Length: 120
Image 1 (cartoon, rainbow, N blue to C red):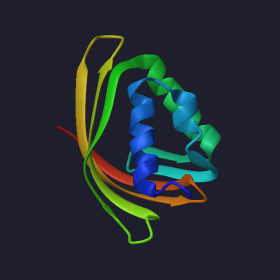
Image 2: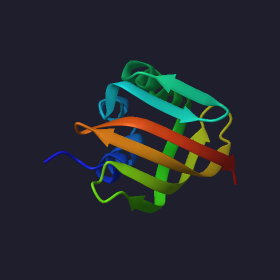
Image 3: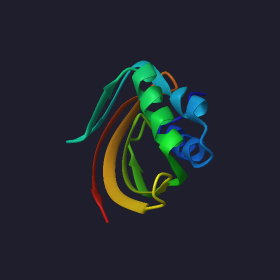
């Protein structure tokens, strides 16, 4: 059985927590889109993985925590409220963001993340 969007997001968070860029990147379909306006818009799994690799290289103690997830009956789409914490390696500054996203999965992979966030 194919993983649901909820399961894929939970795996994504687990991969980020341990700095597993390859594992996190492998969750995205080749034509996936990651968008978090106004700062980020990435198209394609390779581009998303490069972004994640750059992030992991410059940060530590990353934690993506999903506070609440509401899934469509078929598990394809999920609306999620989340918190993102990490420490910037260059200066030791701890950062915290909260946000919401809609994520869609097809064929066992994430195909879309459309999110909004704000520092908190």
